[in-house]
Amino acid sequence: MALPTTMQAQVLNAFNTPYELTTRPFPPPPTGYDILVRVHAASYCHTDAVYASGAMGKTLPLVPCHEFAGTVISAGPAVPASGNLQTGARVGVPGRAYHPCGQCKECTNSEDENYYSVYCPKAGNNGITRDGGFQEYALIDSRQVVPIPEELSFVETAPLMCAGLTVFAALKRCGLQAGDTVGIVGCGGGLGHLGLQFAIEMGYRVLGVDNAEAPLRLAESCLKPDSAAQIFDARCTDAETILSSLADPAPTVLPSERGIPAVLILPESQAAFSFGMSLLRPHGRCVVVSFPEKGFNFSAKDLVFKDVEIVGSLVGSNRCAREMLQLAARKSIRARTRTWSLEALNDLVEAYKKGEGGKLVVDLEASGLGELSRP
Image 1 (cartoon, helix red, strand yellow):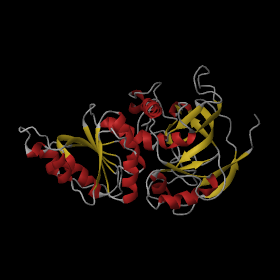
Image 2: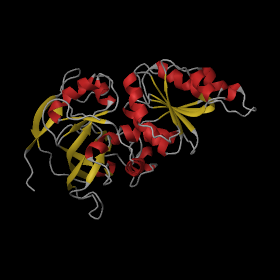
Image 3: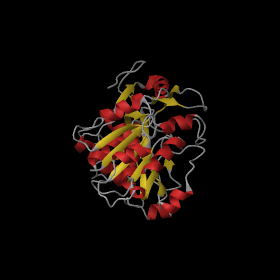
Image 4: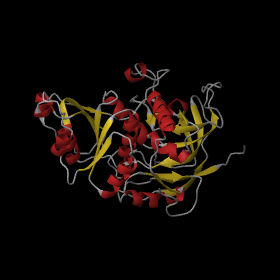
């Protein structure tokens, strides 16, 4: 197949400015563990908005996007010829990690193989420290990609590479067993509506909380008729009311023992964090995924007298990503997506600012301005 000499890319040249559609040279042939991927779909993430504002990172110019999917065009000499990442393979591409060092404590203690860790402090990050998915072709570390099951399309896969992986890994950090209850604060956002679906299929009882009409509708649309899940509007329902509705009928349960064992905090607001903490029972775990610039305030009494644990969760390993994608394919877990062409990326950004929930995706197989599709 004859390859082009140039390609189209959306580039952030300065913070707080629109992306610029640019003609760039075609990438060089892959070396080492790298593969050259033709990008078919690239999903927009909250982190892209944070980066574009100048609040995160300094790399400019930059092609954003750290959750995308495409087809392998060619592979470097270190990529096993007997593996499933040769020419024509369909792959999902998370942001982390490009060229980890293989020698630090993260790499030598990783759950992934060959001293590869997504947490390596020396590794690159697609769309953050190096060019990402808002371009027609990209050089990627083959060790970070995930083979796409045949049940999933490129547009369906792209949002799972960050939003899906992040919330799936956070759910696993909760340390729950099937039948346990988890709260998801921000259940109608990009991560939240996927978290609802994953939690249900992982066998948990789910309490979803949000505070706006569009996200609440999106969350409700993700529930199955027989699922053990409830959605609550934080504008008219407080944590005490939720806990009262969940009160254990056993007379031996004291009021101070009410609560749920784990909660995910997805929004960046203090109100969301405080709401989630109020749902926890003694010895419960709060898993924080969001990272507001000013942080969160918490009660020392919760930590000391209730023995509540607060942990962070950034992303999952490559092994975790493969597990997540297989579950999504097997149980029909899908992001609610809306699509735009590559040239219409700035239109997508304006739609994102309206906060209607779901995932907004660039379909690189499409053309034209304006929104292409929505559920």
